[in-house]
Image (tube, rainbow, N blue to C red; front, side):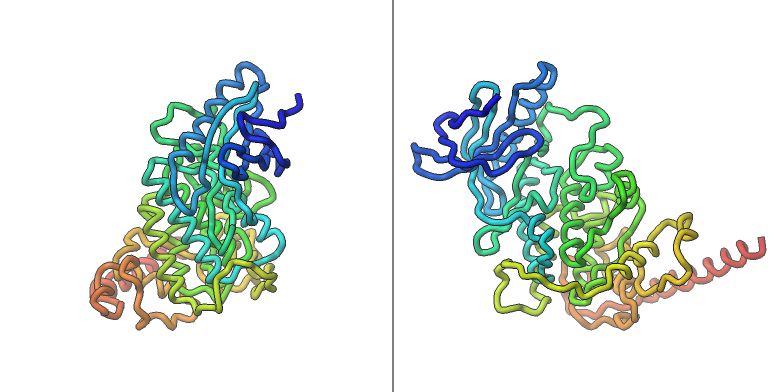
Amino acid sequence: MAEPRKFGRYEVVAELGKGAMGTVYQARDPMLNRTVAIKTVNMDLDRDEVADYEARFYQEARAAGGLNHPNIVTIYDIGKTGTIAYMAMELLEGNELRSIMAQGKVPSVAQAIEIAAQAAEGLGYAHDHDVVHRDIKPANLMIVRDGLVKITDFGIARMRSSEVRTQTGVVLGSPRYMSPEQVVGKRAEPRSDIFSLGVILYEMVTGKAPFTGEDVSAIMFQILNFVPPPPSSINPDAPEMLDFIVAKALAKSPGDRYASAREMASDLRECRRQVPARSSVSLALKPVAPSFDPESAEQLLVLTAPHTRHSDAESSVPESAPALGLSKAFDSMAATSRLIVQTSASGEFAGVTTPIPPNLGQRGFDRGETPGWSPRDKLIFTASVIGAALLGAFIVLA
């Protein structure tokens, strides 16, 4: 059935694109004399499917329509024409982050941090209003005028108070950007969006996704088991602080991630100040040749495989970069100091003198103290080494 050329009072001007659930049009609102985007959902389905599709569509409208933030697309109106439900929203003139990256236009580190910071601020606002996006991916981040980032498509967003549920066993979201809890079918929470944003940030900075595979199962296995190498080990322009931020965002356990997207945004803003400024961060991205060898990057991922898979790796793989780890006590000064040592290939940060923002280590940094090894840390480290040596001897002699 052909779709109408008018939805309510909105007059269709052009078709912008089609998706799995409907079509997006450019339309004109004659009453307010403005151009809008119309997103439709065709309800001409089996009777059993109509109720679920319609409920999810109106859920999207309620979730996104109640949000008013510069980094979130604005919803104007909602209605239904025949069997087609529609939503009138802000027409965005710009480019999806997905299309930008697909064209080989690699953001600079400063640009990547800026994009992620704006997205985190938008997510923080949505989470404060009990809305979880659940499908944060490059296709749902638009770069519009003056580098403004807009989060789009709350199509599978879930208000915690909503009674609409997904089918049992159906995983919603894009596999490469899903959180571990989404992979195993658990309920997505705000920290799930934080994980997804961490994946996007990693991909922007390094030029490759942290979790890859030939099929969905392989990708999901990596999400659950692999710890990618630090961004700075692949892109030398990335500051060490960015390693910490990514580590915290990509923690397997939600409890080890940022408590809120706003906290992540705050750290990203501080990290952005540490990156050498360019003439402007306009986000008008230009093609940039990667500063790393993709094959070497693939080898680095092998090093992070579980011990049962180490036999799959060739013995010639260089141990040029350690895996990015996250202490469960990440917010303590001692844990942060140890993380600096662990993520430094040369070990030159063992006596760090560069200040670290207070929210990455509360104790001592706000007083200007230099992080170091306390007597307790040295005792724990010595005991750990002795224990490891005894365990190794036991395994060899057994």
